[in-house]
Image (cartoon, rainbow, N blue to C red; front, top):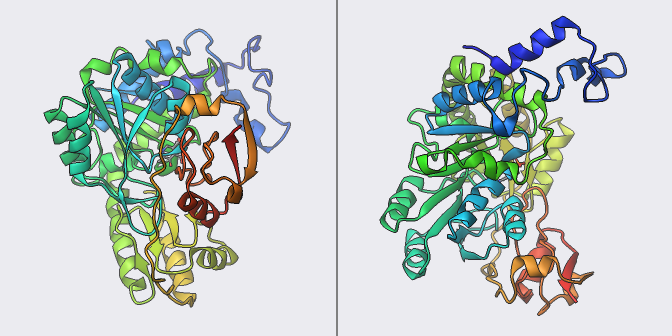
Length: 436
Ligand SMILES: Cc1ncc(COP(=O)(O)O)c(C=O)c1O
């Protein structure tokens, strides 16, 4: 496979030209341990193409990615899935579509709605023990689509932060029935294009989706894909991305996406196969001590223990989880995790002895706060910061979602309820911005 971006950077480095262009480090090495990569960090010099008007090496690399992911087109982002979400929603705004979104959406979605002044009709999943994850009832999506008088789009996060997958194929069929666009936040699922069978959203019928390459594949932080499954958006996606993007995208990140193509072509299927077997063996070895949340395999989500205590014990043994709270610990596997890594994880987890948490009586009531002003108006209002305990009946001004996982409890423009306060406190949030 050709690696057009990486090869260009290598050639330029070997020529040792005098860099009378940005960036200011001039590709010089030796300042610090990171400076060995500075020579490959360039700007749009002749031949380097330009991310949002790509016709050369970037376009060629993106075409390689599109073939690998089996999409109508795939575009690179050096600003994570965040930029892709902004672009997907801008495309929806251009078509004046109603946004119907499942509530366990990431802060990146909320911020994009604020920037674009979009109103959202929320679908609440059937939460289990946490606001991060829950089952989507297809009838809720149908009834929201039935009610809307405008063209609509449905926005779903799958896999969610705990790795739970939505039934994208079914949601896609329903969207087609109602002539609605399906957008999937697949930030956690770039690897799903290479499982057998594939369960990537584009293969299952999504019109648009984003994958954070940096979360699940060997790529640098910030590397992401905007995948297009519907021809109609192929020509318009780049200009939607450029609305929000820096004019100086990192070539290091772009090169990492270019190099990732080689990995996807040569090794990922074998690695996924190997890891899936190791994950099954690991779960079976741990089954007497641990319960796992129903998720796609690469999210190893332990439930039924005090997640904070378990994470603390794991960290003492040199294992850093992706996320933990009182209810769960999420251990994120990627296809490059080795057999040795799995053995270490198993040894440490087997060596720990933590009691199961006692399920407390009394259902947790997950709030459905009422929206009284738009998200944008609330965010740009005059606001004050107060303790969450005093915030009941006030209008939330700032999105308060701890990151990770950055899932909203109450959204700007909504009235804070007593239940919101309980859940905010449960997630360690003690202060909140409210409209004055
Ligand atoms: C579900 C989800 N969507 C979107 C994002 C934003 O992705 P990125 O950090 O690649 O911009 C995240 C980040 O954690 C996420 O978890």
